[in-house]
Image (cartoon, rainbow, N blue to C red):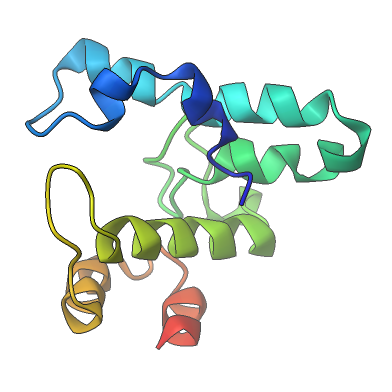
Length: 126
C-alpha cells in the first residue's frame, strides 16, 4: 500500500495525463520511488520497507530505475511488489484507458518473465 507514496510529490497532470508523457514528465514520475523511500525511511515504523519502495521499478536485467539494480541485488520482497505493482497497473482502470482483462495482462507480462519480472512471482499470481 505504501510503495507508491512518492507519487504524492508528482503532479496529477502527469499521473492522469490521457496521452503519452514527454521526457520531462517521465523524469518527474520516475522520482516517485526515491521520494517514497525517503519519506518512509524517516518514519521508524516504516523504515524497513523503504528499500522496497525505492526499488519497486527495478528489473532483474538491471534496466529498471532509479538505481539500475540487477537480479542478485533485488530481495524477494522487492520482486513481489514489482510484479504486483505491474499487474495492478495493467488490470486497473486508468484515466487514459480501461482496465485490461487478467488473461491479457498475463500475455503482456509474459515476454518480460525472467528479464523484468521474477517467473515465480508471475506464477504465484496465476
